Length: 115
Length: 109
Image 1 (spheres, one colour):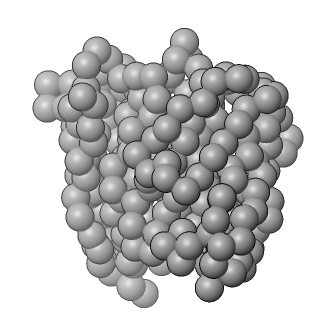
Image 2 (spheres, helix red, strand yellow):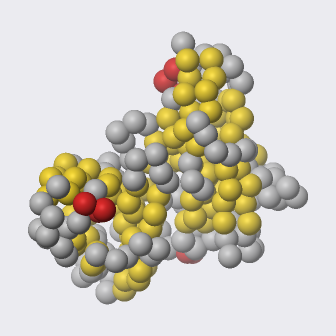
Image 3 (cartoon, rainbow over the protein chains, first blue to last red):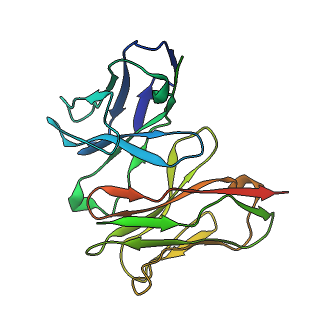
């Protein structure tokens, strides 16, 4: 039972490079979300999806793209990395609103440094 | 809109002290309420939850009661341990989940 799997765990990028953070879940969850967490800060929602083929912006979407071609996968793309994107990125998944009594399941995070 | 307010940290306690972390919420309808814990270098883990008024969630010695009349879901533990040092997040969910800003807890031996 893998839950939510994020890869890579650590990444160093140079300013201007692009990359994709991977997220996969094996629980048949409808909802998937990406958050960033800066040091000493709470979670900020980047993008989310309520099902395959459906994505929407969170509170800090600039500089990031997502797609949801399958239920299982929700990759996050950094288009042109900037030092301000240095952060820890968490992917989370959950059942839909019909089962809102279930919480979200989080991955272990990707620690990204942009130099 | 929905929102969660929790006490700002850091909170520093001695081992075996009593812990309370306050959490209040604003929501339409009847949300489910959650406490998550984040240990250093890890992701968030569900600690406990309550899904209707007067429900008590409990886990690992922690408890929280869903109080609709005061719109609160305070986290308590009778005797904290050094291993409880972490960041604690209160959250509510009607559809998408809404998190508080987190409270950092330090337990001194």
